[in-house]
Image 1: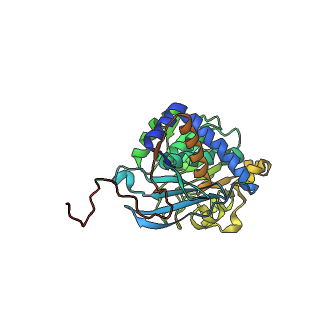
Image 2: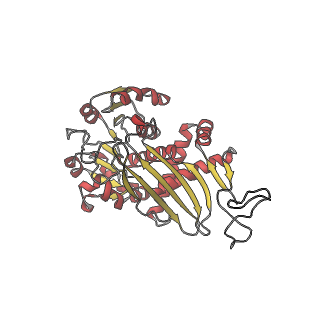
Image 3: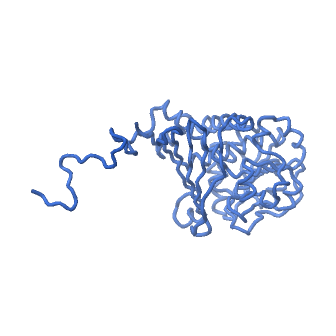
Length: 356
């Protein structure tokens, strides 16, 4: 029994063969179905993620995110957030791997890169929330933060809205300047603008920043369109928030995982009484969301392991269809389950012995 490994090259070939749009659409559709099942108690259990903070050229963290389907599988993502990576190490801010275990035996069934998977599923989650809470005729998308996550935020939204204009702002001019090229595959009109102009003009706003703990908000509370919908994805540590508290307090707020949102999302500014709905419940009954489209709404997207579980399913299925992935004997599976050490092969040198 081997473990299937989808490495970075495999995932690049999946996306290159199937197409970026098809992969995003499949993850979005499957996530919507999984959230509906979650509302009915049919999608297993996703505990809040655990982890610890660490110094990573700025305050970072390493977290583990589990999802459990009893009798079937356990999906576990380990993910590191290191805000200094792009500047100091030429690495993505978010690195991670996703593992799939058989729930009955504990056997490691699959292992995959989590960098692209995390970005895609986060964009898909915002697409699901925006389709519920944003006005269907939304045409202007604003982005505060133009890093890697902003690419899939815009990509996910472009699959469910007819976008006419994109306004983007980043505190690092280099990130903003390169963003139009990085999303060129979408064929959208992208313009760099000051933060306040982005916020004031947007029908849908996505905040995806590496703001430091205690340094938020990332824009000032201004007059916004009365129907503005916000996907806030950058808050992922206690004390790290992106949105002005006053704006949150007058908005209808939904979240993907209540416990996480109260601890490290935008909802840590509000408390439990400030949460209007769970995203899964709105997916199960969309009519509950529609009345809020005429007012300001916020999706507090903390990211939870059900999303990773769904995205891994999609990538594993597409990889299997394309014959991609490497099967490796990672685990020791002896013929005698009670045997501790692997058998010594002829020719192996025993340390501590002399030849002859």
